[in-house]
Length: 274
Image 1: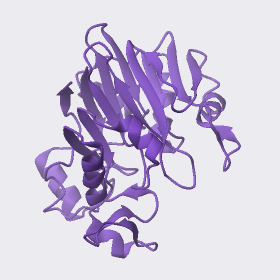
Image 2: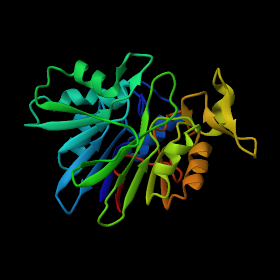
Image 3: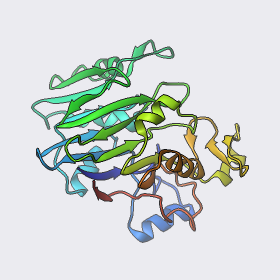
Image 4: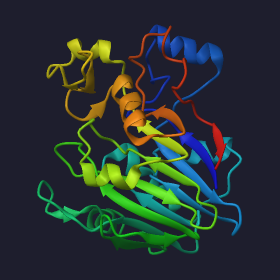
């Protein structure tokens, strides 16, 4: 299983358009990007590939990274930075199955699958497959399980992708606070690679109107506000899940420049063989 991080940034990406902060300036100096979130997973045995989330930067990502167009996709939730790139499917695919959870969101009255179907009903070559959380399904020769995480006010899902022939396992936390349910953690547990949302360092929680929560024994917030983990929360989750390797994704340009490119914060284009 070959994993390529196409997009490792948050809603605005890094560098952020029109921003001259030290972190965006340093990203430009280094020639690196963190575009909006997307992960490409290739089953090298079958030659098929799967795309997790459709970044608005879809076109740029596939023009700059050496990966094939996906044979199928997964949408974790309906925020634009994870979904709106699906419009790029127009004229690119003969058939594109897109998998998404079938659980109804009380906020929208629709499941993620239903929202994707409604919003992209003009894409007649995109076929949405509703999937039930915690029930594994096969796509591109890999076993995928969606699990609910905590990203209020909308429902959101993390997922585990496993190659049942080799035992390789990728876990994605999804957009989430540290408050991931225990049943979901059990599915995500013991990955070879964990991609964990860590939007900012915990030190910035004092600047959020809601502060931080899920404070560890060291007094450090593991959640920034209520929707995303801090860097420290992502690392705590990695320890909880006994991850072999961890990359922190969905990071914002609010990281101080002297911390923004330190390990284990990911940048676009990283690849991993599991």
